[in-house]
Image (cartoon, rainbow, N blue to C red; front, side, top):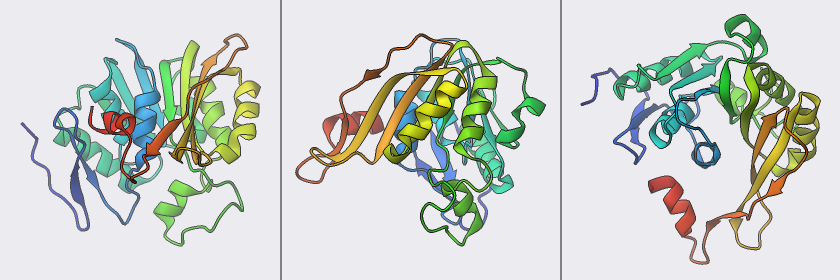
Length: 247
C-alpha cells in the first residue's frame, strides 16, 4: 500500500515497472533517463552492503537499486533542494524510508557529512558536460544536472574514493568522449578500472554512453564487456534492453 502524498504543481507520478514502485518527477527540473536505468543494472550490490549515490536527483538510482539488489542501506546525496524534496517524497510514497535516505548536501563537502570509508558501493550519474562543453540550458536545475556547474568529474571521483571502503566498488555512467579523463582521475584517486561496457544506440553505430566499474586499491586489469545495443533494426528495444527495463 502506498503512503499518501501531495503532488505539487507540474509534478507527475511515473511507474518504474519493478516491485510496484513509482517515482515523482517534474519535467521543469530533470527527469531520469535510460542512463540511470543502465547504471542501476550495471552496479553490483551484494547482500548487506551499504550504497551511496552521488548527485541522486529525484532518487531514481537508490530506488532502483533497492528494487534490484539485496543491499542493506541506500543513501542519495543531492545539492538541489527541490530535487531532494521530490526524492524524499518518492521514498515515503513507496514506503522505503527504512532502507533509503536522501541527504541534502554538496559532493565537494562529503567529508563534512560522512565518515571516511563508510560505504561498500558508490554510484554516480553526474553531469556529462565539462566547462565549455555544449550549450548550457538557461533553466538552472537542468543546467546543473547536465553541466559541471556545481561539481566536476574530479569532485565526484575524489568523493567516491573518500567514501569507499578498501576494495569497495565505484560505478559510473558517462560519455565515451570523457573516457581518458575518467581513467586518469580514477587512477589518481586509487580507484582501479576493472570493467567497462559501451552502450551503442544501434549495432555498428558509435557508442554514446559508457558504464565503468572501479575498485579501490585493486590490481591492474580491466575487462571490456560486449557492447550493449539499445535498438534493433526495427527501432525497437533489444531483448537485453527490455530485460533491463522490465525484468
